[in-house]
Length: 111
Image 1: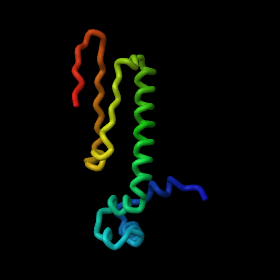
Image 2 (image 1 turned 120 degrees about the vertical axis):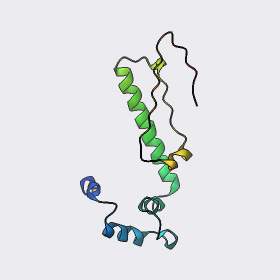
Image 3 (image 1 turned 90 degrees about the horizontal axis):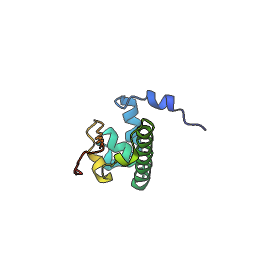
């Protein structure tokens, strides 16, 4: 049976029927948790980390590939990803920092 991603994308996380269904799947200790927290309890932590690492690696490769295809030398690029334990503090905003180092620039790496 194939996954119908169109139907999945149509699901409204605030739909009471969806929340009732989700609540029926989680342990009693998570019954009053947020929708996101309930969903996270359904997938083993190891699997989440594996998928997160895979997606981050893919995203970094695509960013590097795009920038180098636009003529930016790879030696002038540094792609760093937030530590996995900090990803849980996601605020809903995508955050990217792009430093472009041109010949003659003196730049100190920032943490």
